[in-house]
Image (cartoon, rainbow, N blue to C red; front, side, top):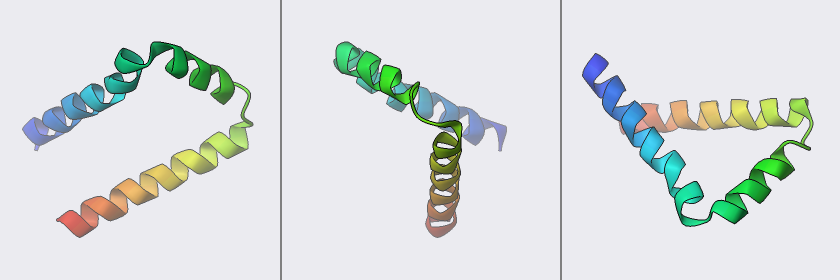
Length: 61
């Protein structure tokens, strides 16, 4: 299990790094805009993201 978790973490880092590598200015602007979003909206987006990810993992398994 730890090996798969490590692989998943490494893949997440690769995917997270694509946008800042290819489009650093756009990424910086996006992060600046996210700083202006209310905490409640960020938490809602985070919850939706977690639920979607868990649902997709369930379907793929």
